[in-house]
Image (cartoon, rainbow, N blue to C red):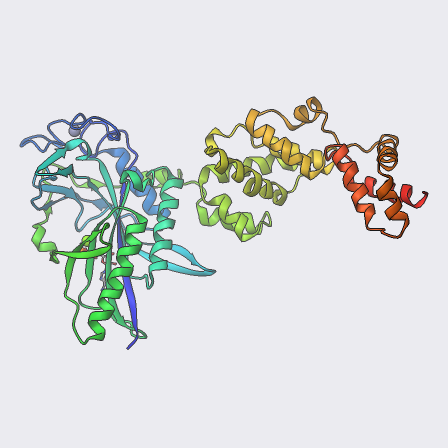
Length: 481
Ligand code: ADP
Ligand code: MG
Ligand code: ZN
């Protein structure tokens, strides 16, 4: 029998707030010495009281709206009780039945096919402390305890590892556009849990049992674990067995899943309303105010670049991948309008030369010295015939290194295209005089040697001669020999 994978993802994203979720400690703990960002609240001391971080709530509502979610009028925090050494209080403050948002979706583009993936809810909770195990010792660093974590729960609507990968990338892209999460997986800013089941292809019912894989700390781990789990379940079903409902871990080194425990149910956590926090009233005016902060999102940008500016889907995709790059490009296009420079030509320079140099020299868009308006200025010089396209590439490199204007570089280095007939004729005559063998060859009928003479002229002028004019003048000269 043929099986279809059913995948649902739970993604945890650390929010870029200044302070932690329920206390005033700094949430920016990366690189800090262990146990330096803490207070009675995030240490879980009895009697310490939590206070809701307003910015974290706003980031969550902003994200939820970007994912087309509904925002209910009331939200509530609940205690999720379990015991683990990284959980200071013995419970995590999370959201159970009244999350900040529900019922959204995002779109993914799987090789040209657009698919809608439902988002069940986006809610807010707090991160745990971090454990380090070495040898016989286990140590705990509380700095991460209480950092705001946004949980994004998808519907079980992905049916291949590739769809799960594209969904995760799209989430990350939107979170970075919104500036709510760094998306930096190496630093643990985004973590995944994958829920996987199989069903007979062609059927629509969800399998009653599923396997949840926890602690996937990178996109790569999520992809490998999901592939592994689909293969494992396929083998069980093909052998006539049944897949047990369970929670598994992922062993990166051995590239395999391992059983952690049989799947816990919601009642195992003994959820109950957090008594130290009030129910949160989310006024419509507040939601509207937050919504007004939504930037143009990647899908809208991508469509606009293709439809209005005529970019290829490749260029539109790479330019909108990061918001900073897309905004840089938009500013260059705006400046280009006054100079009659086409948006498509600017896109070629950005996705070509600019990206190449950024990659080669390891420069982020924010540190690029070329101002957006300097790009159409350079292109205008090419359009006016002042410099050739090849010279323009050299000028661009110089601009990248120094931030100088194209015009200034062209003047200072004498790079202007040579279109002066008399000057070019003099150069051609000298080359003819210096190369009797080639001249004889040409006369004997090797007319292809004309291109060799053109090449010599370009070399002598360091590429600055106007190529069309050189071709014409060389042909004239050789004919009159
Ligand atoms: P919990 O993990 O807390 O029990 P849910 O039951 O809401 O939470 O489901 C969590 C995730 O499991 C969701 O992302 C959902 O899409 C996914 N899921 C639910 N049923 C299935 C299934 N049959 N196969 C695969 N994923 C599923
Ligand atoms: Mg879960
Ligand atoms: Zn604290």
